[in-house]
Amino acid sequence: MYERMLDKQHCPSPEEMRAFCGENARRFDEINALLQNEFQTETTPAFPYGNHYGWCVAHRRKGRLCCNVFPEDGAFTVMLRLSDAQCRAAYVGAGPFGRALIDGKYPCGDGGWIHCRVTGEDTLAEAWNLICARFGKGPKGAN
Image 1: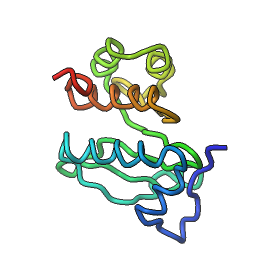
Image 2 (image 1 turned 45 degrees about the vertical axis):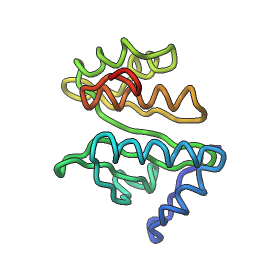
Image 3 (image 1 turned 60 degrees about the vertical axis):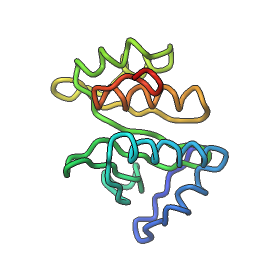
């Protein structure tokens, strides 16, 4: 369950990534579109961290990585790095799932890496809250 696209020799098309997400394909499209429209990110397919991570959609703004969206079998994971201040901001708008992700972040300098698996509307909202904190903006509908 939640296998990733690990064939490094085949760069999947956006349609293949979307289809791989299964019942969460619409949410995969939604989060990628929101990132592009709300935060003007540019997207590229990437195989950034080796064979355990696989292919993703890398979102960059002004050349700097904002987050990665990894398609998975039936879901997808948003991976991003937040500073301690961004974690505090995200914590305010987070539910129990989002708070657990922030509490369990992988430490890295000032802040850490968070992996948010989206499996439905509730986890999509948590992912969006984290993304908004990354960009210093309140959650969707708050601003």
